[in-house]
Length: 350
Length: 228
Image (cartoon, rainbow over all chains, first blue to last red; front, side, top):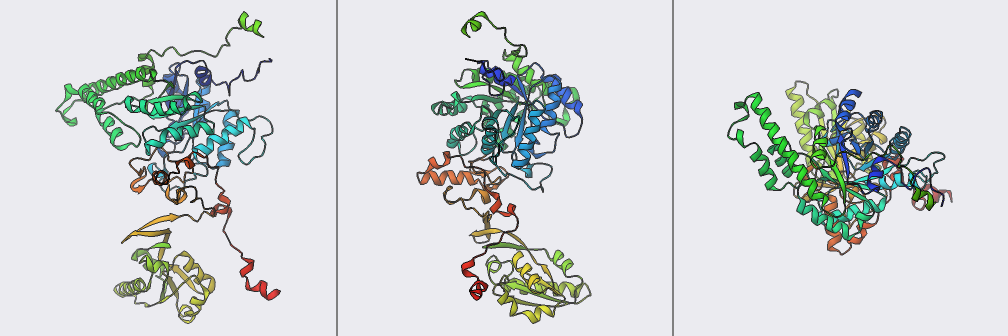
């Protein structure tokens, strides 16, 4: 059989795809682009993530706040030698804008795409804006998969020339409502064409095991790579906020208690009674505990059948990605930049 | 029905500030039922404006009248003298009523007294809720009679986003998650399998996105009959 020299059997041949395809437990990170036009912000955050993960998500106007575009940020990331996963939300673009931007993103060297509905604009800094939602995230997955596989635009017209080939990702929120439907919604995204999945932050391993059991019973884990969401808690307040105010995130009380205990030496003192140094020391203690929790969670997630990797969301703490990956024994990351040597066995096979 | 809310008195005062003779026109249909622009509201608005103009020292002549439906020429014809005698007509009809007056009386200045809000229904005394976006391609047959276009904050067609929790929408706990309701209803009706079908991108052309819409029914047109 003549080997396909262009793709080597990969959908797009991105580093992320190669890592997952090789059965290596994958690590993706996340980078929030700045609310300004300063490329150096991306470059300095990239330095923190380089070598710590296989690919980096670039959020698309996250929480509906205007930021440098994910495609532009992704291009800067490529210049720094990292692989981007650009996020694209349905809130800000109609199908014309999406396809046009994706042609451009591919031309600029971007190979991974995460399709999302997008936070509602009323949360952000332009709450009076009109939203788009021309298509939803599942329809976007279908559209970009058809661009790759059928070489066609959403309207059915053929793409004459180079088609954009993305390794297509989707999000899963295992604990959002209606909870019984969540494994099916994930299956639907995979049926639409999603190649990989990144989940919402997981803190409740037992609940996630129940979700994954259902996912496995539907066979979804064999059709797409599932990366579990990980994010370090930075304080007990943040842990409580996540539990109480962020839809779809479960934080068990014992984890909140651990965060409280980590700050115990400073217990009983109000914020204004603490010196600057004391506040810093307390914050460091909380963050250390948050990282330790993440490392433990990663070990537990690795044990769950069908979990192909983790997606670390540092949320304005990009350093944490390396610390968690290191702590969990996931460094160094594999290097696919140099082609594997052609062995005799393979030659004989041909 | 069409649901509307009254503009503030301040805004109404600004809208009629140049006029000496003002005619407040109520409407006897949708906006009467939602207590925004019926006969009773027209009387209240007229007397409030009368009082306000008197207090401001520039007394205006403000009268009121209510027709059965502002959106049909025949009802507007019944008040043509009053309309034409006013410097400004303050319509308490929906946006359609305001435009009907402007279209039917080209020499009359008409201003809106209401903000037309949505197509919906009263869920209980004093509460109205949106139900329809008039998208032009009804999909209620797929969703158990609950509209995700009008009732999901993101108009999603393939199930709930990650912001659904305890049956509420992430944007406001006062808003029910449409997809939770759809799920519950399909579950109740033993039709959950319907949710596994991927719904294709919607044809928004038949909605407002295709430009202003018009329906022409040849079978009903009087001019066609006359031509035959």
